[in-house]
Image (cartoon, rainbow, N blue to C red; front, side, top):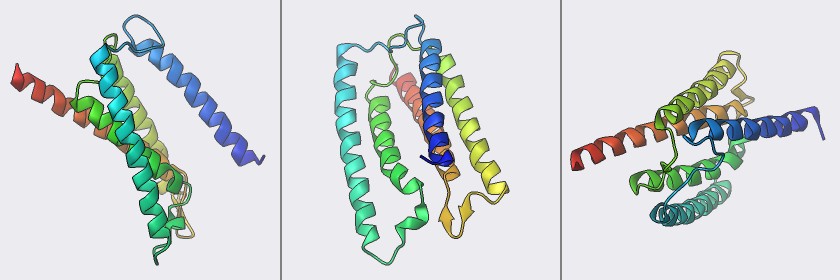
Length: 172
């Protein structure tokens, strides 16, 4: 295992530990687990199914692109992340607009602060890499592009939650 691989593994482990701590903080009852009612669980199940198929379709598209003149290897490390990101976006979007995203014990103000912090952190890493010329090397995108995409994901989620709040406000 190289130093780089070790760093990636350590980063993932630290990220999971931070996620567990944050889950405890954003739930009103201090629980690690977000609570959902039966209808929300059904919505989430459907959302996971759609997210799974979106991931498969995204992988298929990238495989097809690999057979063309487009050099998908220019996406670098992000090539493997793009289908995951697309699956997450589909899953989250379905949950948000079908009332399956926000749990019964979720503290939304804390959750929104967390989303902003994650977005800012990821954008900062991606932008700093770009400033230092580490975003693109030899025509190949580097790992910090993933940070920019994750930052974008949280911005998309925040916008979706805002739109959903406006829609629900008009219905009331």
